[in-house]
Length: 384
View 1: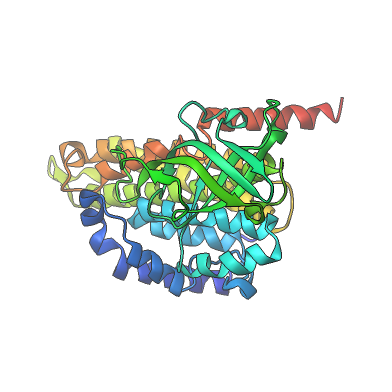
View 2: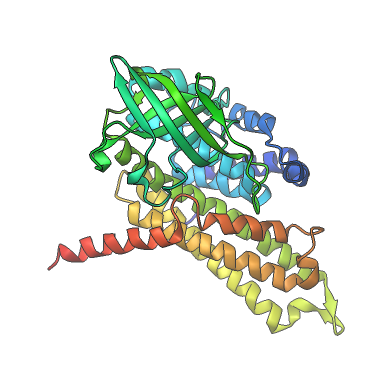
């Protein structure tokens, strides 16, 4: 593993940084205040190739990997976590269709998702089932060459905004995870409606709604993979998604640390900059150290994924550590800035609110510890 960016990665980092400075940073506060998703900026990201980085060139992708993908997500998240989450969520149907879809599905959807001609979402969570994903109740009844789907999905990012969703539903009722199937659904299908836009602590420029499905008629050709394969698809997607959430959390933490550092260098108390006091400089040193450690964990998970090696444990560790660090860093950034940090005149209070949800999405951090410990037990069992 090389700790230095190669030429392609350096160019990519410079390109997305310039894009963010021009198209994102000046508008973030307005988007958040108005709870308005910047769909036109999403389309520009697609037009510039930033949405198709780890996907094949034949489907309008860049043919690169997750090591490059997380560079882009981190830079976007430094300005707008809402937009970074939207990009990561759009990547889940891309990932699932690319890995498990048939050729017709790939040609029909992947080029449009990569260019943001259409945008995507992922519908797994339900009102009564979040961490216990294998117990979902949304049901798809097979009727000849169709499925009729009924149920409710909750806390779905980009619901009502995205055009296409990978939806998980039961196709049998034995209680097994093998009962679950993945479907491609589109928001214009009859019987699909969306709930109110949820009022959240943060990420207000990204819509979060319920999806209601009432006798939604889905053709059998919209099954991804095969019937009963959905739970495996979902878990694989979450493994990859944890890498993207880790990268997003690192971007938030970097932004908070930079804001606190600039403030500490310019703010004077007792006749000198407050950064000269250990009570300020030591927390800043901890921020820098822990952010870099989180980035290395995330890069390692991406490195393994790009080489087709097992990465589930590493993705869970990256997500766990990076999101916990983001919460710690943003909290300490507010503390370094004192009363000013609590004011909306500075962005650190927003970073702190945005960091919190990173510990919850793509599997809570308690679930990450469960994933990690189970891998540890399996690994040691092989030696006993």
